[in-house]
Image 1: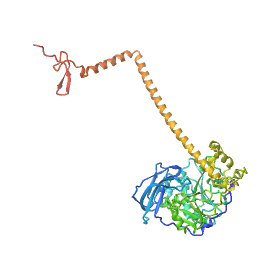
Image 2: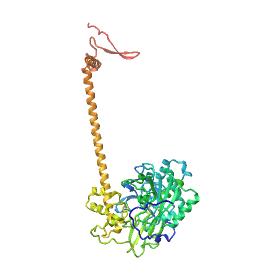
Image 3: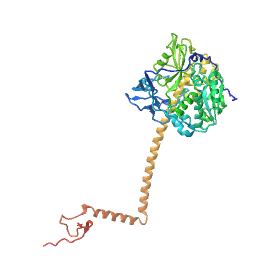
Image 4: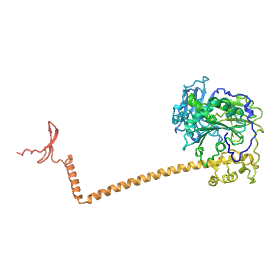
Length: 537
């Protein structure tokens, strides 16, 4: 029995998971077009490796990152490249960026996919390469490249799989664990082999009994016990990476640190299943399970969706919008964000489409002044002071906000839930964090430019010093006792050079007394000979 170390704060939310669990998991229909945004995590754009009018196959690479850690993007069905143009992104900003649009042909023809029969024969580096080439990123929502996370900067001893779906509406991980438990467990073993760790803890919320039973049954069938299935309390945000690590191990990730600093690597259960398919079957990440839920859709359910499918196609397959549909959200009600259109595509990190009916989600109400009740500080699972952070963020005093650990905020929204003044705290912190990160990047660019300029000045100074030292050595050599002999030798060499120059040859073509004339030699060509000129008659 694994001991649990409860984290501070958190809230109990009314669960709505049964809404999407009535109907069984189904495959989403093949859409008429697929859209693949090239903007990747961290603001980097993948570069297209296909051209307009080209036919592509399912599983074919259509874009790659300029930098090797950026995973490639694969076509999720066969068809023609219709266009490569800017389109709106499924992002809170609503901005447009370059996208590849595929017009599907209905054939769904795929490239040849070859897996590895026994992954234990491959080195961790080779396995990381396979996972990166399959385009796998974190499927919990962050979208961080999985291969990079599998190469921690320091040694770790524990792998944690995150199956704690703490958002009240999302059930995609629950559906995955109930239908494909063996793939998740085998994927966990692949990740353990890469990391070289002896144990894996799979944290799953205790309100998912069917998934727990399926995992334990699959674990008993293979007879191996390195993976421990651990039910955890249904408290939001148990699914947060740092909170789950503390809950399962008692270790705290330090401020501005990563899980590897606590000897742990944490992955989503969907990521583990994707790693299994990539290594064993050779399948790239071209589909994922998405929850389509909310009172604003007629038939909520979980669908296995191709990456790039427009949201409108999923809503249509779920019976369409109900008369009460009011708001479209990507993600859950706590950490998701509203969408302006359902023409946006499903990306790798999209786990839920929430169609909220009128009055289904709590209304924020009119924002009032802070009454300093301290409820936000009591509930914060990261042990921050949201009240102080809010004041400094609103005043644009980002330096002081950073001193109060602004970047450690996980934007869970717990403070918003309990604030009696309806202050949009999480939204304010998200904007302030973006500005802090942007300022940091600007400082890095300025530092890099200054370092290059200083290096250039140092090189020029070094060249001047070398030239001055060479001139000094030459002057010292000429001033020594044998310096006169060196000078005379230089003069003799200069005289010989002048004597050999054609400009120094005197007289007419007939020559003059004492003139050196070149005559051909039968054996060696021309050589200088001295001969007297004929006397005048």
